[in-house]
Image (cartoon, rainbow, N blue to C red):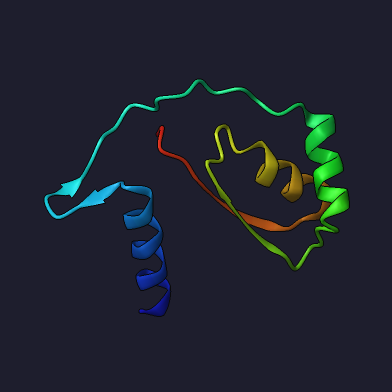
Amino acid sequence: MKNRRFLFVILAVLGCLTADGWQTKQPDVIFVATPNRVVEEMLRVADVREDDLIYDLGCGDGRIIILAAQKVGSRGVGIDIDP
């Protein structure tokens, strides 16, 4: 129950959930992917390890959590306004 409450809070904060249900909203900015070499350096500086759980708000294509899983075996949750 605690995890479901946490997810609800995240979705409500992002504006995806309203009193009437799910809301669809078009992004008002363009998506620009972060180069993989930059993501790899971010993971190195953050010292991401196998037992870490990464939450990426505004994840875009999810490359940060995907590379973290591939490189070190960590887990991740990506949340984005654009399905």
